[in-house]
Structures are given as structure tokens and as C-alpha cells.
Amino acid sequence: MSGPKAAAPLRILAVVNLPWDTRLGASRVWMELAEEWTRAGHFVEKFCLTDAFPKATSSSVVSTLRTALFPRRAAAFVRQNAARFDVIDCLIGTLPFPKKTLNFRGLLVARSVGLYRLYNKFLLEAAQRWPEEPHGRIAGRVFHHVLESRFLRNANVAVLTCDLLNLPNESEREALAQDSAVRASAVVEPYGLSDRFRKALALAAAPARERLRRQKICFIGAWSLRKGSRDWPQIIDLIWKQNTKVDFVFLGTMVDEEVMRAEFRGADPERIVCRPKYEAKDLPSLLADCTLALFPSYIEGFGLAVLEQLAAGLPTIAYDVPGPRQILPAELLTPAGNPSAIALRALQILALPSTEYETLSINCSAVADRYRWRDIAAATIEHYRQARESLGK
Image (cartoon, rainbow, N blue to C red; front, side, top):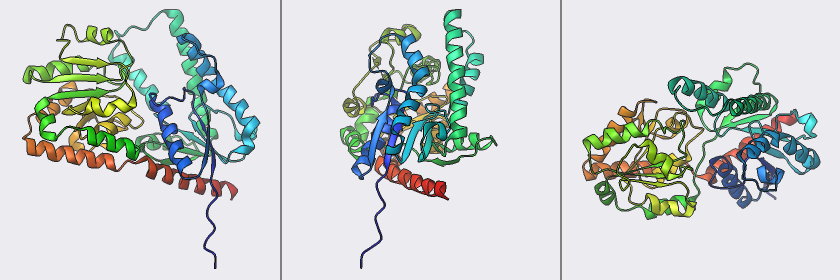
């Protein structure tokens, strides 16, 4: 007697308006999911920015225009290939068209890697919080305002026309649930680490006692207002006033080192190390001797950098905002926009007895162990199967 029939593999198209590059957090989500899905027997293709525009450009204006034009090229690709896919998993706003106009009968998923509504809210608040920030020339401001309005419109259309929303945190689900026009159901699936990378981070880490003795704080992320660039000078100053032994390392800032040093106003360059770019394979060694991590981001979709640092055994202190609050225990969260609170918590951890620090480090590693791409990929496929069945009904 034969057993139950195995479910057929899904044919999935990933659509993202960025280059297919693991150094870009949004692209990395689809790339690592695609790896797990392929390993599980599913078929995955992608349509990304460089597929839509193969010719390289170094112009920021051209790059921005390409991002704005991407939805039409993505739609053209889908219309030509719609019958080949069961699921389209696309970044919110990259396919802002009704399925009928795409000739697609499968499951259309709009995925968030940071909900545009919450991010736009932060931009409005940032303009009031830091009015002295340079805004560029008038022509440039008008150009970007027009494009941002278009991106927002596309995102709004996408959440109204998709079959399913895939969100990385509960705050985003709550935000969309308040809009009665949004009819699509939503699932919340976090991000994760591959088993291979998680093990590499853990194995490279120096013994906890040695890391505590090192007194070194790290940050992973782009140097921007959203990631807390305006808070860092105050954080560093507050920490150095109480502990002169602390060193800092900034990784993946994506800006020239001179830009950051200008904002630190004459701080000892040997005490602050900046690595604007790095390869993923180098991250375990870069984090190996760090003591703890700070993440003063004002808004996140999830926070892969938080997960990476936890996997390296680093207590990671973050602002209590969407994303990090989904990952971290309350003892490692501080009020958003309060550099004093995050600096104070860092000083408390740096002053822990070695046994207590080691326990905290072990607990942080255990948090990271709960977020595995293998499990998340499998859970996501189950969501998609159920949603496809609902379409049929």
C-alpha cells in the first residue's frame, strides 16, 4: 500500500529591485531563502535590478531612475514567463499591478524587508529631529521627492493587489491591520542564518573571558541617520568618560572612513576602526575579539546584523524598535533615541564579572540558534502552499 503522495515542488520567482548581492541586506534575504528552497527540491529563479538593466553604471542618478523604472521591466518579464511559476515572491512595490494584467494565476506574495509606511514615518520624524541635516540642492530635492512619491504609490498599490503579505515582524502586521483597504492576509516570518555561517561565527569567537578583557564594541550597518549615525558621537563620549579602555569598530558603513572621523571630531583614530566594506566570509574573524555590540537603529525590518553578532556570542544592545524587539530580550533593549541609556547599558555589561558575562554571552548565542534559514524556508513554503489552496477555493 503506497503512502500519501508527496507535495509537488514549487516553482518560485524572486523579484527584487537591487543587484543580486549578499552584501545588500534585502537581496541576501532572497538569496539565502533560494539556497534553502533549492536544497529542498523547489525551483527558484530571480529577476533583479541587473537582470532588468544589465549595463553597469556608476551614476547615482541613473541608478535611482533604474529603480523607478524597474517595476515595468519586472512586469514585462512576468507576462512573458507567468506560466512557469507557481509563486512570485517580490519586494513590496516591485510589481504594483493586478495579477490579471500580469497574466499570472499563481500566488503573488508581497514581501517586506522594512515596511515602507514605517520607514516613511521615520523620515518625517528625522526631518523634525535633525532639521540642520543637509538636504542638497533644490533640483535634487525635487527629483528625489518625485521618485519617493512614486515608490510610495507603488508600495501602496502592491499591498492592495497581492494575495499574501510576508512580513518580518509583528509591528508591521499591526500597522497594516489598521488599514481596512488591505485585504490580503499576512504571515510573519523572521530572517535567519545558515547553519554553516552560524557555526563559523561561533567557532571564531574568542573565549568569553578574553573578549571581556578586550573591551571592544562593534557596530554593523550603513552609516546613516536611520542606523543612528547622529547618536554615535554622544554614545562614544559617554562611554569614554566612564571607561577609557574601550575601543570601537564599525563594519559595513558604506562611507569613506574620513566621513565618519569628521563626525567624531578629533577622536583618537587608533581607538575607532572603520571598515566600510567587508566580505561575509571575513565577518567571523572581525567579530572574534569584540566584547559587545551596539545597534542604535531607529527602524528595521528585522536586523540580520543583530543576529550575526548574537551568533558570535556578543551581547547586543539595541533601541526598542520594530525588528530588534522581535529578537532581543528586554534586558538588551533601550528607549529609542536615547544615547545615554544605550551607553549606560553598555558600561554595565563591560563591567560584569567574567562568569556573568560568559553566561550572558551563552544566552545570546542561544537566541541566534532559534533563527535558522532552513526552518524559516520550510515554514514559508508551508504558508505558500496553504495560501495557494485558498486561492483555488
